[in-house]
Image (cartoon, rainbow, N blue to C red; front, side):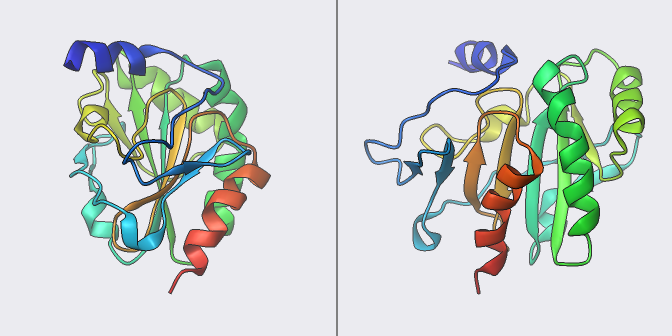
Length: 184
C-alpha cells in the first residue's frame, strides 16, 4: 500500500480529479478545490522535521494560525509556475494570521531546493521530505496531498479545510485561503 501511495505521489501533475463521494466528507467544486465543512474535518497528521536550510519546523507550532501547506519539488514544472504566486501571497498575508510551509519532496539533495526558493523569492520554511514519508502520514479518505504540486489549507485547529491538486495562481490560492481565514 505504501508503495502504491508513493507511486501516486511521484507524479508531477498539472491537476486531476478527486472523488468527494463515499464517506470522505469532502466535496470537489467545479474549480478543482476540495473542501470539508468545519464540523466534519479530521486532524492533520504530525508534520515536523528538518527544513531544506537545516532548521526544525513543527506544523503544530502554528496552531491558531491558518496554514498554507504546499507540496513541491524543484524539478516540477507546475511547481515553478506557481512559486511566484505563493511568494507574493505569503508576504501579503504574513501579518494576517497565515503561515506558509512548504514540503519539498523528491529532491535528492537540498541544493536544488535552496536554489529554487532563492530564485522564486520563497521566504517561508520548507520541510525536506525527499522520500515522501511526511506525505504518506495523511490518512486515505481525507484531504491528502496526492500529486506534486498539492496545496492544503489547514484551519486554525490544524485540520485540512481545502485542497488543490494542481498548480495555483494567486487568484485560485486566495479563493482557497480567504474562506478559511474568515472562519471564527
